[in-house]
Length: 429
Image (cartoon, rainbow, N blue to C red; front, side):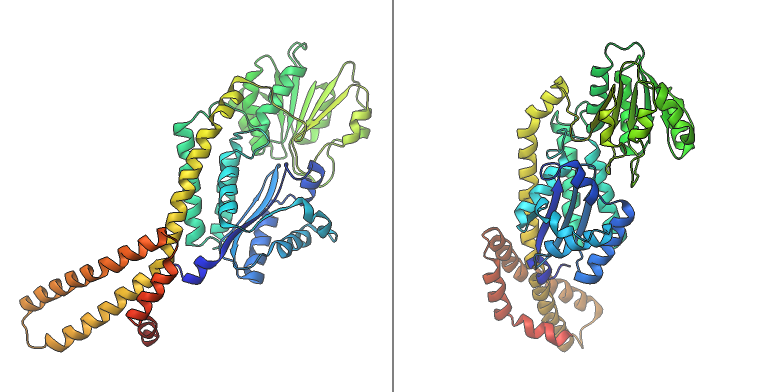
């Protein structure tokens, strides 16, 4: 059961996203799973935070947490420490700080539904949020508040899928990349496409390549078995990772989505290539895995996650048209969640009252049931329990009604004084 002081904590958020920071800033701040795990442990040790969620994707790095204090500066400093950045404070203005419950919770819902995605309705965000929640739960960093909140988010996501066209079709960043490839290779017969890296985004690009059926697709990955399994499933070729530079020469399009601290495809490499017409490089990695200076090489075209833009396809138009319905569903879910949150505030008082009445009932039963038989004792037990439930009903109803009026504090104080609940609670310790 939640304690009152837990409920008085505010749910807060800090967010660095494609709306507030360019890719060269986002890639510096981006967190991998190991870093997220390390930060969660530090948050717990340094600040005794229980409800915490860290979300880091190519478009955003966000921390959600419950605490009575605004810890945004301390959290940003810890992120800098984790990333080895001595000048992290210089990045602070890129972070949006939300210290209001309503703002933070609304933002989490909007991000989770894909409303805040670079390509609206991006389907990958749902699985990324689930993974972030799982990391928190595994470290016991998700209390009753966050558990309830996340299940409300997942239920809302299900409603969005079932009740709107917002998730119809494919309009993710990876699909936007495929649309770009299709446009640029439209005059190329059987364009040769090399996919380097088949993580979440790389795999999504591979699956969306069915939209360019004439393309000849080759996949490579550090783990050969993973690349082969995907290639076999989709009917593509697969090459060993240590041979991928040989295939860069042959390909018309190179899509790179690998995690690397330094550029994987350099200007020197691209300068060594024979580019008779053009060679398209699509960098979907954060941090970026292709040197931006390759654009200086004649015939080399470079796009990254910031400048890929999906054409106004019918799918995207349907999604945009569905936004008001999605926002209405979110509003309903947030309202339901806040009703639950308000009621949780009075649960400790209800329990104290119930325990106080039960204590009185037991004391009186022990005084008067010494000489009654088993059958009579069972009847008296049933009657007194029923009476207690009826007595409890009125204050419970009044407390819940007070929650909806936002004046539960006054009602809690009245009931606590009336039944001397603090004394009862102290006596039980």
